[in-house]
Amino acid sequence: MIFRLAALFLAVLPWCGRAKAQESAVTEPRGIYTVKIPGAPSAGTTARTYLGVQLLPDRRFVGLVQSVNGATLRLQYFGDHHLVADPARLCYLHVLTGDGRGFVTDITEYRTTELVCAENLTPWVTPGTQILIRPHPLLSDLLGTANTYGLGEGTDADSADNVVIWDPDTQQERVFYFHSTRARWEEKGIVEDAGGATLRYPHGFYIVRRTPGTLRIKISGEIGANAILLPARPGACVFSLPVNLTGSLDAMVRATGDHAVVSGPNARKADLLTFEETSTGMQRGPFYHLSRGKFSGWREVGVNDSTAAIQPMDFLSTLILRRESGNGRVLVEGSLEPPATPRPPLPPDPEPGEVPLKGEFAMPPTPPVGVSFLIETSTDLQTWTTYASPVQENGKLVFDLPSGQGRAFYRLRVTIF
Image 1: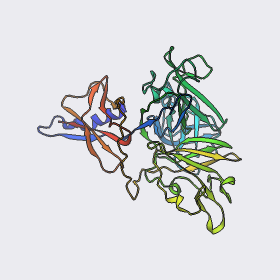
Image 2: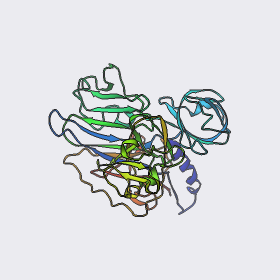
Image 3: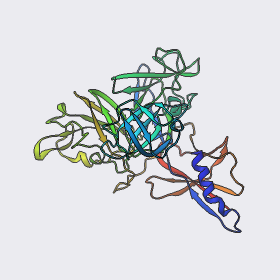
Image 4: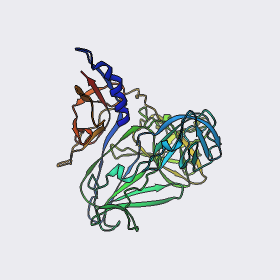
């Protein structure tokens, strides 16, 4: 974001010398949403909240592929390929166009003239394919190095609140908690700092609360709406989904053709899809795709009509996909087009004594004199309204987020007088 703001200043600086003239420009929008995490209802019980990583770290590269050879590729019109690396984070390659659209694989090595990936690229990438490179977020990126949002701490995983990452490839979970005396994130059974643990997109995660009281956390980042191929495996799979403002089930999940869900004559023989709506905490479904001639289509388990396909889904939902057998990939579509019928706003529903949360934009360390900043907000990326005047704190422009929970997009308007 610092580099984008620097470019923004350069775009409007030519106006600085004109008497009584001014010019303004806006940054690309960022998503910032706040989510309530309920506490355990009573001693000895737990509460589980599924979350996703729908809002993503800033991209490192978007461009075209020049050549492919197995797991290696060369970028078109690009110099030293080491420059796309993130020194602190594992990066992944995301295919945006062509027959392999949606394919994601980690980058394992950076060479001067090529990148090496974790999987064979030839089925998914050809010369001229557009790809995106982005880092996976770290545990500390999402929840803060010092446990920003106050999840319950403890001396072991069984006494503290847990952050659980589910890996569908291995059908194994990794359990993390904040150690109360060592004041750091640790993984269950491993005595070392785990703040740098990677949450691999599009894998999801969930929080298990053992402590009482509702907490509110903030998740922010770039808006990721590119289609993605989810690696479905037998058993349970928890996935982050691309942002999809239109949000109906039939618009999001491919049910026919390549990379479709497994359909079946009944729910027991088909993929089951349950959506947890991040903002409301409600689960929708499970849904499955019925294969029965002219009666084929999306169904909700226990419901015989076909209204499941048009039910609007929260555009920040987390998907829990359960498959009986067979590895495969399911294509899920993102969209930044607003829904035909606007959704009603969420009630603020603030908690008594809740900790205030702040949004922020990074900025260049020495902006020119005579600059004003305004934060604008939108819920549909179409209509923008002035929200707040930020304050400068430690090289960032900071503003208060609304109380309660909600979801919105924010952008920074820079005006040079």
